[in-house]
Image 1 (cartoon, helix red, strand yellow):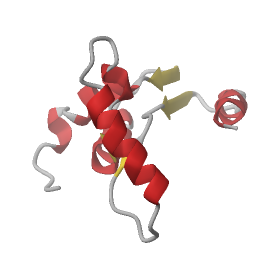
Image 2: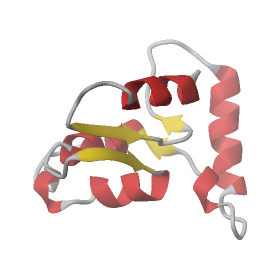
Image 3: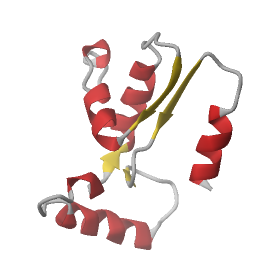
Image 4: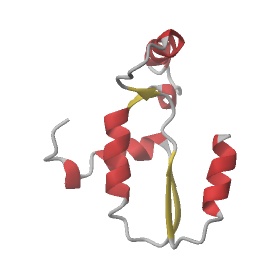
Amino acid sequence: MKGELDRDVQKLPFQTIRILKPGILEGERSEHRTGEKVMINLSKIISKLPGLKKLRPIHVRTVARAMINSCFDETKGIKIYTMEEIFLLSNNELLMNIKN
């Protein structure tokens, strides 16, 4: 479904489109999801192995900062951010003064 949504969004007639692909999201939820918690903890361990860093979970605050910062990029066209790019974008100084 995610791939179909990405494809369909890219067809929309906007001058600028930003798509973020964060991977496993970590953060507080109102509902209890045991399987998801197990996967997050497992991915934290697995991601320490060589070549598997991209499997680490990413906190929802990090994604939110990156989403906001992506709005300041005035480049026209479609930009798809990978998880590594999301980490970099979230550290942009535009939001460094906002508390977690």
